[in-house]
Image (cartoon, rainbow, N blue to C red; front, side, top):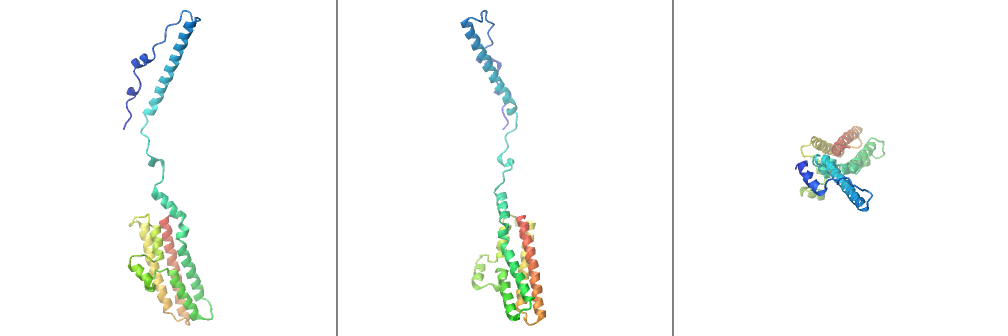
Length: 236
């Protein structure tokens, strides 16, 4: 809505004249008490007239200005921006499961490539660590309770939950989210392959132990790629 014309806001000359009559002619005897009172009254009337006219003049530039912009144009961030900032601040907590799984896989690699006195026990420990590091993301290794929860629509794969949280502000077709989902699928395949290699290996054979070690390194690489996908979603 545009402001009303300036001419409608400034009183006409007739109104001003009615409110503030013109200055009286000079007094014949300014020292007379009655003439002094009239002179003071006239001076005050002239001063008041000047103040009001000055106030009207100061309004003219203001009335010509465009309407005040809305609050959103002042740079106030919305709820989505606030949530994005909160996710960035909590990134290290969201990435903690990935970091913990990587540490576990690295310890398994050192164990399987070491010179332990009991290869059978070493492989058993590696198998246990693999299942723990996969965080319920190997379907064939889920127990009955986890399988029941999965079949009822409750997500149990920790890495899927991490991705869902990190990409919650992105559209389904967002390239960053799609790339992270592809990296998650690769990670799940890598864990499944690692688990199969570990379960089918003979701990006494150096070649089999090396296959497990190679599979561990491949899974660690896939885990690093997935972590980068999560960071891309979080913009950190």
